[in-house]
Amino acid sequence: MSSPSWQKVFSTLAGERSRTLYARAVLGDPLEASPKEIQRLVDAGLLTPDREVAGELFKEVLAASMPARPQGVDRFFREGRIDGLPRTGADRDALLSHLTERLLPADAELAEPEVNRLLATVTRDVPSLRRALVDAGYLERYPDGSGYRRVLDEP
Image 1: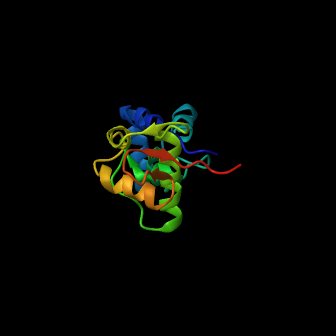
Image 2: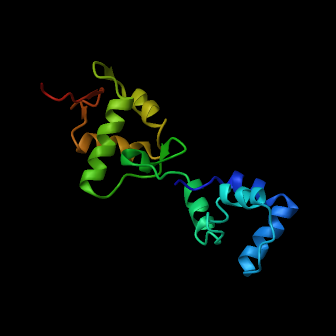
């Protein structure tokens, strides 16, 4: 059975009678309650069907309400921007590859100001990112410095 939502738990405990019955159950006092009142506590997940206090309920509800952790390259972004480049080779390569695909057109020669403008959409440290893309072989800088071109994988 899945954990009840925090809204269900709180809405049940908002009622004074339910709150009193739950407090009695937690304290181990006898529950003098109607079957309907007991069922309300069970449905909220506060009690088990055998009238025992669901001891792990609050941990489960808190865990279920936590936002999912980003996976893959998404874990390097905060509010759409990267703070810095990962140090490890595989993570660094995955992020640089992702940024190349996302930001740099495949069939265009770009002047440095244009490359800088595109990279500035995801970082404050444009020169470091541009240099990393060139060093990793994702971006080619022309020898005369006149422009850049995205390096395409050979089919």
